[in-house]
Length: 251
Ligand SMILES: [Zn+2]
Image (cartoon, rainbow, N blue to C red; front, side, top):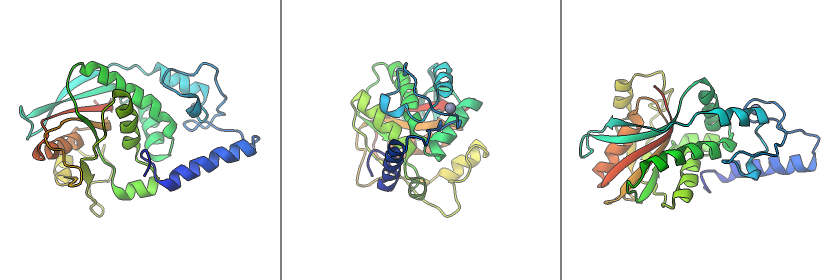
């Protein structure tokens, strides 16, 4: 797996690009809304020229209007030294952001990754001098990874880790349970989710966390149950500290 993508997913994307180059009449459409994705001269700050192709100017404009306001809230984590960890988030999970995440997570629109990593980097700036030794992404279940061809959180983690110059440490593994906790998350209440997620993650024995200071990274925080479960395992495996960062937070 390279940079959060399976080789077949990366290959399909490459082929798509080649086909569009060979048959330019096959106009590109926006990966989010389906409108033609005309190239814009003024690319937004967070976008590199190579990933501007599949978003239309309207969606780029909408993204630019997304207000980034970094917030920090405390999340209860049993094993944390003070019983809680800080969770930083950059944007609200409103209807527009929900659409974006759906495209990013389920429809292969990884062109949105630069935007979300831009949001996460804004959170990083707010962290100030808080020391971190490594980035630990919340892992995606292996069957989902196979089905979708990419791990959207890992893609974000790679981008953020590059920018903040920290190594990625895949210290967590998601345990698969048939028909279990990987169902719809938002529909469930916090208590139920916490119970279901207990044991949903395990420490990766090949990547022990030791006494490291962890920057735990995920896309969205809904009830916080996922982050709490992961942080508990990290502390149980000897992590010195855990700070969490998510792009969006559901209120
Ligand atoms: Zn669009």
